[in-house]
Length: 320
Ligand code: DGY
Image 1 (tube, rainbow, N blue to C red):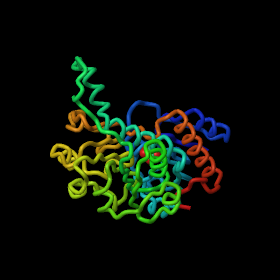
Image 2 (tube, helix red, strand yellow):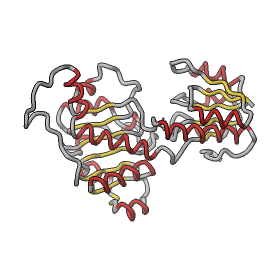
Image 3 (tube, rainbow, N blue to C red):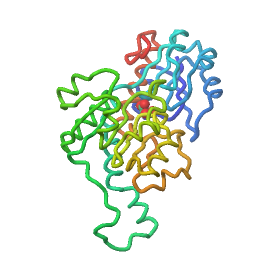
Image 4 (cartoon, rainbow, N blue to C red):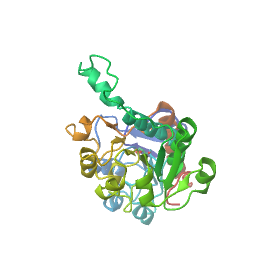
């Protein structure tokens, strides 16, 4: 029973694999593997534990049809062609639920950092350009009592709404494919239309999956409808917003600020104009990057591998 792991993962996950007698090959170089390299490695292994955005499509699966399971070290699975995996009878699993706390913390961190221009002030100090206190210079805005719009009220969106309601008394509105009765009851969240979400949100935070429906959805048309004081936050997937349109919307003052943990492409080019804007904060996809969360994710991903190799249903299988 041999598993190929595309990146170094936390020790806790490796321990689960070792205890189950699984032989581990872990790629430890500090670079992304190419698809061809992953295919070459998979040919010699029985299962794949994929950490990162490797594209697993029909062409990949045709060559790796022998795999007993593909376990993703992520909740998102937009990099995998699930119907194709199902066609090849390969179960695919993810790590749902356990990263809602950490990822919603990053969304809140971005909301506060953008609204108080924290990254801008940090860079000003680093450049030696902060000389004295000025009562009216570089003022931010407060999030207390404002309206938080959630696009995609699932576990991560609900976790953010819970924090913002209890700590900042924010009014919660949301737009989803379907109503979330639990969020409406617990958080007094109001379901609104797509247009109402854009028009009424002071801060709009994206927590939806990347799909053909959501790709590029936050474009000029959407930014035009937002408040000029509005803040756009995306911790889900970079391809959900159109980066060129976001730059233009910020430059023209159509919205006030943006906080991104996800970009398109990743990594963002170092000369991207967003990086020089005082009301923009950009992070390198670190939503789940805590010792606690990544450890739990590694254990879940490893348990899914063990189950697949033992011919059992993966606990977090996406395509049962
Ligand atoms: C996830 O779990 O989907 C994170 O975004 C990492 O890819």
